[in-house]
Length: 196
Image (cartoon, rainbow, N blue to C red; front, side):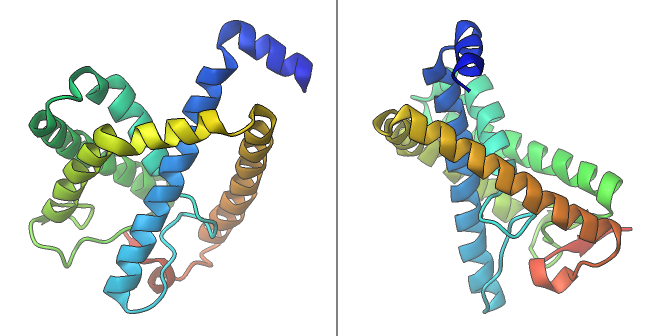
């Protein structure tokens, strides 16, 4: 393990790897939490919003990584621009992910057909506005808070935690994917929208 980390650190310093992993895991968890709380309130029952059973929505981690690192970081001091760019970019990312899920799985893990100003139930105005608000939260305090937490925790603890989270998520997702491919998934249990 130490030899592997030494090789990786020659290419990318461990602080950068751990920071990226921490931000990805942090946003994936926060995204799951926000989604699950909101959908539990809408459905009047506890609703898990992740692809799998565990508390993890990697679409949030990946979206944060792509949108913040590639775009928002360069104008984080202009909150109106952050709101507009976050709204547009995250909506386009949501549309792309939905199209990929429809193509590969026949399902989308959200359903906006009852929301006003929606497009085929996969994007809607309400979510677009929410993405803009998330972008503002991200640049004003959220990302910095996650990075501070990552830098506060011991390196060995972080590495062990990230490996454990990764393995558990892969096992969890593999189980869910097998259920989907065998037609053993309940649409109502996870607010799925069947497309095929």
